[in-house]
Length: 91
Image (cartoon, rainbow, N blue to C red):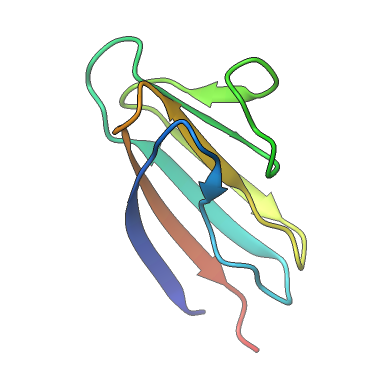
């Protein structure tokens, strides 16, 4: 199983947090901030602070995504770092 990992500096503009895969894939997301109120919001390409769930500072989230799906992320305030580890099924 290929494993991809990276860090994304989030802004107030949604950006893809993981790569699209043609098979079901597992994504681990981690908010690297330790400061309170530095939230990362995740959802579809129109994610915002008012229409999505968030990852608290220092917390992680694990998602199982269907083939062809991706997650977008943005932060409030801008500059919060999101750690991403994606585990793809072998092609």
